[in-house]
Figure 1: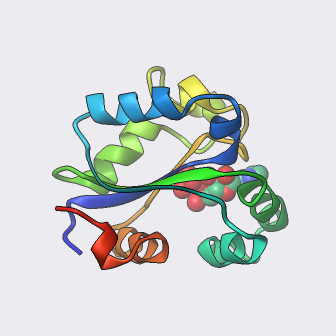
Figure 2: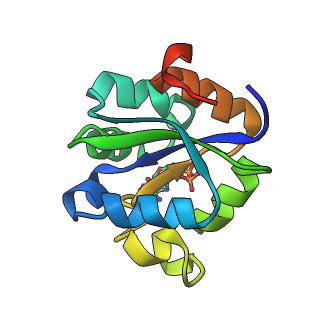
Figure 3: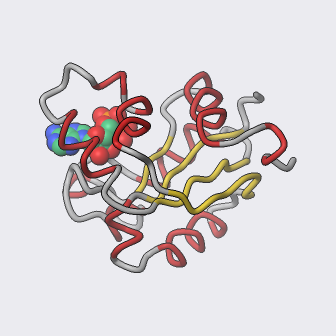
Length: 140
Ligand code: ADP
């Protein structure tokens, strides 16, 4: 996949708190085009697979429990320099450290329940997009 795409998830906390619309508006206003999107729920097994890179971290089980605790919105976003620009739009992992105006500063409640995911590299954007979507579900 080209380096102009990234994968986001609106996490269960933000869905529960009624922020799907606000976050999608923020994403659109930041210049990202939605090329794939679905409302879905991860099983604990799938959440564990998605975050397998964090398997040895102390928060892994908490993360898996949280990410499988309710529905999410998964989406593939397109824009020049998508991965890096989207990381700026979402802000730091810990909302207490996230810059004002970022999605996490506005909508996250804690370092764990931090409203959104954004891929951290082009390689992971590709892997994560294919984790959630078939090629036939992505629209250029
Ligand atoms: P990011 O999502 O900003 O790329 P990481 O890849 O470091 O951050 O972590 C993945 C996810 O794991 C975070 O978004 C957050 O939901 C959770 N997480 C990270 N650090 C902690 C922590 N110290 N305690 C609980 N959950 C955490």
